[in-house]
Amino acid sequence: MKNKIGLLLVGVLIATVGFTSLEPVSAIAGSIKLTYANFPPAPTFPCVQMERWKKEVEKRTNGQVKVDTFPGGTLLGAKNMMDGVIAGQAKVGNLCMAYQPGRFVVTNATSLPLGIPNAYVGSLVLWDLWAKYEPQEFGKVKVLAMFTTAPTNIMSKVPVRTLEDLQGLDLRASGGAAQILSAWGANPVGMPMPATVEALQKGVVKGLYSSLEVMKDFKFAESCKYVTMTDTVIYPFAVVMNMDSWNQLPKDVQVILDDLKVEQSKWTGDYMDNHVKKAMKWAVETQGVEVINLSAAEKARWDAKLQPLTDKWITDAKAKGLPAEEIVADIKRLIKKYSE
Ligand code: DTR
Image: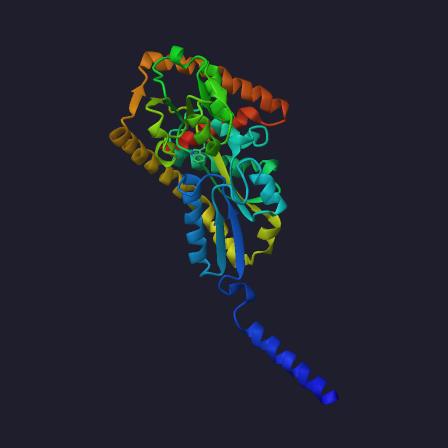
């Protein structure tokens, strides 16, 4: 009996030594599994960037990390993304901050009409803004990327050539973009992007206010035959990870994900800007979409209506104890810096 126990102990010892002298446990292929939730359908830009992140992470960790992606709201939807990730229903999630404007006050300041020219610049501005202020609403998660859409324009079933055409027009928008529509006299109808398909079909809205890649990705060009160029505002996004899951990652994997953060944000901004161009070429050439450019005089009328929005945001954000003027000044400075 004694001998048997002795043998057993030796066996355990050999197994332990043998095991620890091999690769660390975490380096076994596929040993770390990350679920990644996303709310819109697979072909849209938030999911394209998700697949790119998955590919890069799996490659850079030599397959040690395996990412299972869930597009189309199959794991978490547009509005419960942040809470779902905090609760651990998904380990990683992608969210549009404009869908919860009151929750993401600092980062949603990028949705003020301050002149972000494209998604690449927008993404870098957003990233720096978040990094400087580290707003408490992200305190319970690890931020893995931040990016913005390209500037927002009106896609509609009826032509919008003047401010008068816009009065009372039901257009789908969220967050800062919805406030801009209100200031112009339109009637913004709030809902996450995926719900817009049905709203357009049923006639609940006459169009939408968003970045233009959706003309192709959601086939909105089939019903919205007019695009009025306003290039006024972007929608900010964040990719966040459950904090416990992050803390459980081996250090080498954390370094890889940290290295990818800004790169992923830039990649997405770049992808978005190029994709908008392709989508609009398709919309004009194959769907007969008319692009309406406002005259300088008309544009000046539209711009004048937007001036009070930033002042109002400053007053509201100050009341919440935020350094509102500094935030707006930072955004303007960063736009300049990254546009050069
Ligand atoms: N413009 C925002 C965000 C957005 C832009 N393109 C897509 C594609 C899929 C989901 C969201 C978005 C919006 O209108 O919701």
